[in-house]
Image 1 (tube, rainbow, N blue to C red):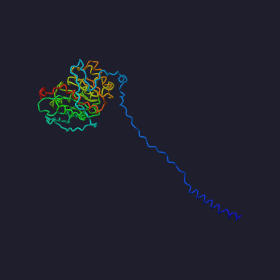
Image 2: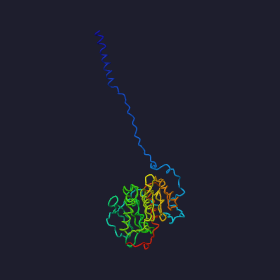
Image 3: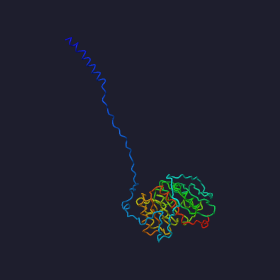
Image 4: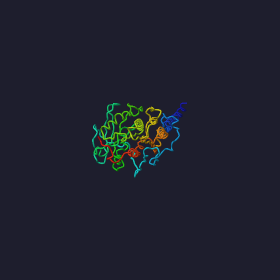
Length: 366
């Protein structure tokens, strides 16, 4: 028995050692790494800006009025009831090319006292200042464009009041290129020398209840008298016009329709017009019916994709049905700086077409 153990033990020991060696040297099972997939970026989907919820279906589904639309610069026929000749934008000899970068930098030094004259160097003067107001603060900001040689011939200048939109400031019209177009037009003889006043609306611009505690009251009761008293401004309705962009278009129309004796022309560009949110007492969509607009030139325009087009179409239809002379232009584009900058020369052409280029025909500046 002992002999048998002696014979078997070496083999068993070798077997055990061999088994251990096999167990120790056997490769571990391969663990496959978890598949990782690259993260798929979310691609934004851009769609046309939706109509605001405040618009009612009957307005949105109102029948089109394409028969009355005119495309700029297509010539617009003169309606038989128009007291003034209908303006046709003059095509530029070269296309207007924009850099696509907005806003255009504006250098407008501040001044406390209105200047009595400016240089005759071929360029207008752009300044910013403040005017007194008992509404919303003791003073309010404004920008002003004065033509070359302002104040040197002793005569008054026609004045255009231009109101910015709800998210812009009083430099917006200048950022769109107003000073450059004005300088070029005056130098070429296309425009008479004129003054442009661009007031700041601020948060009050979004409050569409008119009256003396609104942009209407600030403009009529404080801004106009201040400009008339401190500049060589033509202080009669025949020497003033007013225009605005978006919410500023609402205010330009609201003020002109409420005070037609103060202005000879009004323009609304992409105007923000709604019946649902703007009181009828002040809303141009309602006040046109009782205003005497027989001597008022009226210009309306918008981009074909403007999300505020229902209100603009409605005002056009209402004026047309009432036999009130006006122009309504629909162009390519939407509600943007690119649209307004492209058509700014047409706005100036229209406003300035009424006034004579001969300086001798203007009243003296007192």
